[in-house]
Image (spheres, rainbow, N blue to C red):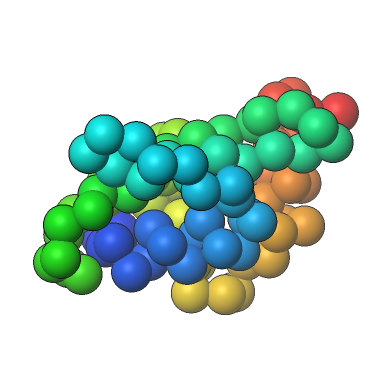
Length: 91
C-alpha cells in the first residue's frame, strides 16, 4: 500500500493548484475546476514530514497508488481530470 506523507500531500496540492486555507489544526487544500470545488483535503501542520496522510487518496478520488503517482509526477493534472471525468464527477 502506498503511504502518503505530508511532503507528498503538499506535492499533490501543488500539482492540483489547490487554494490553501488555514484551518484550526490543518491547512486545507481546496481544488477547483472551472470555478467549482471538486476536492479538498487537510494537511497536518505537525513538523513530522513522514506523518501519514492516508486520507488524501480518497478525498482526491484516487487509489493510494495513483495518489502517490500524482504526487511523484507520473500522473499529471490533466490525467487526474480525466479520472474525474471518467467517474462522472466533472463534465
